[in-house]
Image 1 (cartoon, rainbow, N blue to C red):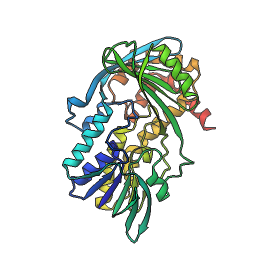
Image 2 (cartoon, rainbow, N blue to C red):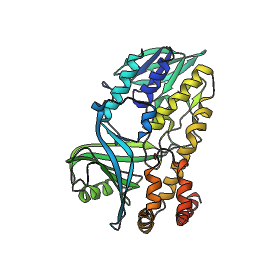
Image 3 (spheres, rainbow, N blue to C red):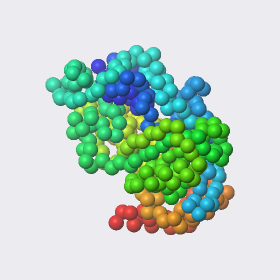
Image 4 (cartoon, one colour):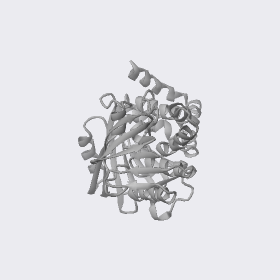
Length: 364
């Protein structure tokens, strides 16, 4: 038996792929409905097609064809991109869990994980007031993962977080097929259109997110309909994600690209290596980090560089990327994989190397 704690995309997609290998899988979800509450911007690149080739149109809210970057001094550039998907996030989670159910996975709702202990080669764990036993336990239970803490894999006091704040709003929309990025608000801010009238407006920040969020609401002339916030883990390549027959995946494992703080694609991609590890008794840490770790590390370096930016740096960055030679590179590459385009941009525009010194300053 394989038990998974958490029915988000990481947990449900891992369950689906494990069940397809004729393994017995159960998922325990603390909430009474999969996909609620929502804590995500709901935008995913077309890299998702490699994992979910038949995405139902019913869960799509919008499709994004352009991204407009706004500098603090009011300049901007717009780049065409491979079409991004804007999802109704709760419906995406529910769709993935339905795939898992159709493959034979059993879901337990209103089931809060409490603790675990080892018994011979088995794992005994407590859900609400009941005890369960399993051969394998997978923590897909978010950034504060109780599975990670109970197993000793995660020291929550050493994990770094960033705050995400987002509201569904009625606001001024530039174009319904264009996401707007605002530099200089927290680490960065966004406006993601759902249609001609409504958008998701938010930001990520380490400090004072409320002040920048209020400024963002005024800038976009937004009227809040509903509000979401949450803590996002910062990727840590040293984090151990397997201890014998206990594993971490998704936000629990810090599988979040630090440049944009999105984690759905990497969290779902890791299930392939989790399955391989369990079936073939391979080292899970080595497998997923070998295949996903370098790009996640590059995203972290991009984020660490941007953290040192001044207002002038942001303005210069937008000026540089207003050139067609750089916009063309961005438009032809999916953002999940910076390893495929960062070197190309440096060759086209060597002045970008000056930002590398910001990373050196951060490392001191």
